Length: 287
Image 1 (tube, rainbow, N blue to C red):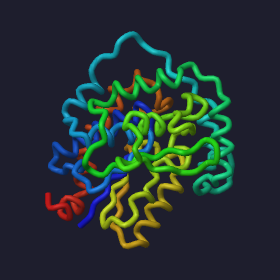
Image 2 (image 1 turned 45 degrees about the vertical axis):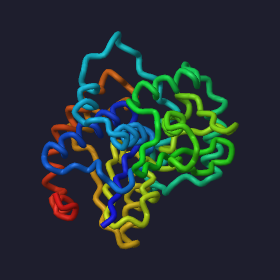
Image 3 (image 1 turned 90 degrees about the vertical axis):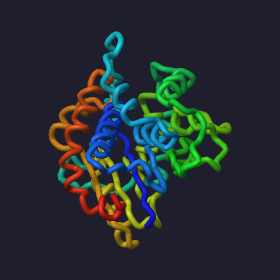
Image 4 (image 1 turned 60 degrees about the vertical axis):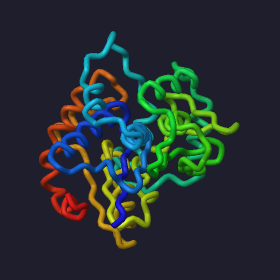
């Protein structure tokens, strides 16, 4: 049986929640990190790179809950939240839409290139490098998602792409309007979460797919459609989203580092119930 783990977008609180959840599930006897393929988008690209390169979950969790230095003001997410709200249909009676078209992604890409951000591209790369204990691609299959800002093309970076792992992760975390796009081979790339918060379709062809979606509330229709598409292809698909306590910890600003410890603890707390709901997955994985 082939198994894929899909780790979705969610900012620094999403990284924390995913880390707490994965540790808690492991503690409950369901280690999901040994997947045949890990798909990482934005926050999920960080966690995916960490676990596939062998970083211990206990150490990753400790880093999330340890005290921070001087309090940092979280970035303004105004334009980004407007985009996601429009995509989810929250501002009116219109039903939630599916993935943005390539033309829409190219428009967002132009906005991302033109936006004035408080951090530089080099500065963001240093932040990403600090989050990755290992900077070389793992031997285990890892797919990291991003979008070309010039034409809206969707890309998945893999070991075979020849792109350094920190650059690939930085491109997947380049939130438009907030952080500058990442330059790779003369082209500039932005956050893969703009296309989909999970990009679960990358896991097509696997018999079991587990989708972990920190901000599924934005673009949930896309996540559900991706799951149904995989099921139509014959896969068993399970989706884990934050419970009420985790939602409270993750929001209102998923890029607020001050909420990191709360989000990690919420993920750890949710893991017990999640493990019970995933009992069938445990059996299927032989755990």
